[in-house]
Image (cartoon, rainbow, N blue to C red):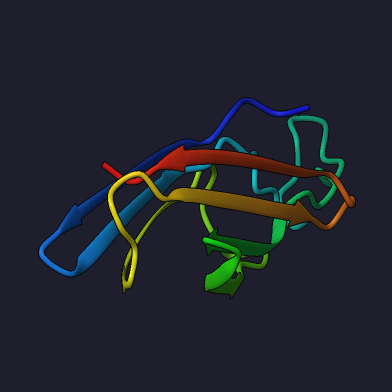
Length: 103
């Protein structure tokens, strides 16, 4: 399984800012190695972020996103101490879920 995601969730006033660093090779399937063979595609297809079992981000990333993507977004409604759950699934059906608390 891949390395854990780095998740930072901070509440300021009524807004929660989420910052994610996801360890993933994000290979498009179009690049060739030194011998000329294509490097097989391996990229995150879906990313879902939940707070209190409510989806706050549902994204399709696709093959055009860089290696180890960094994603940041804001949402309303989270409270300090709430658990943020982040799940990704790639095109090879591998997935990972990590959690963090809002600070």
